Length: 264
Image 1 (cartoon, rainbow, N blue to C red):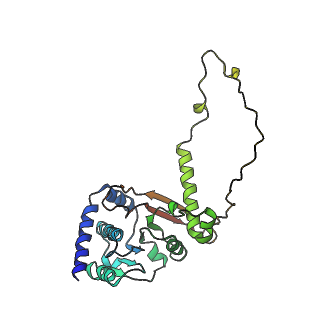
Image 2: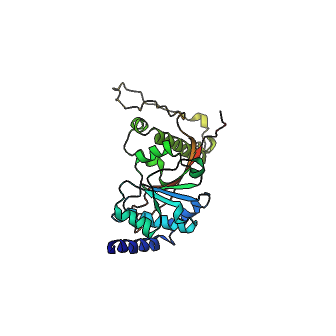
Image 3: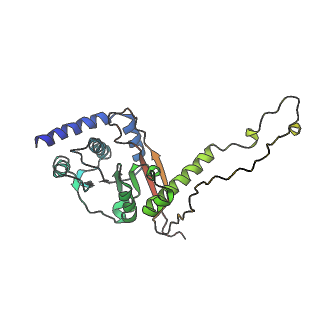
């Protein structure tokens, strides 16, 4: 019991460290737009044994306090939870530790899913079975890691499709913001010369052997078997020099928009 009391003291210290930071304020600002009444935390890790997990639990406590989420509406599950973890979460924090997922639209539409550093496999299954609207977790655009696009789509089809939608949206927004008219990009004229007086000299092409370049196969990102059609990803900046180290690296609010039921 003494060791758990020590963990509780470190947790309180972590809460103090995070509060009043720009990182927390940015997180709260994003979440204030969401009408959630529950928080479901998945893949936290072991808060009694892991540095990252205890800091991530500290953020959960701050979110619960800010948005007045009662302990009975906060549930967690990770298969690696130890008896000490469960005791900390249920006895000290009064949270619910529950392996079973509630999948009713009524529940998911009112629940923020807090999934810091959740594995790809967990997120993909979650997209298939739970159909969350809001995930506070990894920026989905970085979840492919070193996998090729084809392998990513094969192994984690729903997550890969969500990432594809996010990347297309990000690219479209970037192109729109950097769009410059052709006239503004025209080369400056040399004084005393008309533009038509310039001559372009091209080098003669040599017959060089073609290099073999790998080309990704054309992939089918159809949305037949998924519940979403758009996503908005907003990164939450976590300084590299922060005392919590990489506990919140790649953290983002992923707002997943379901396909309208009456849409053809």
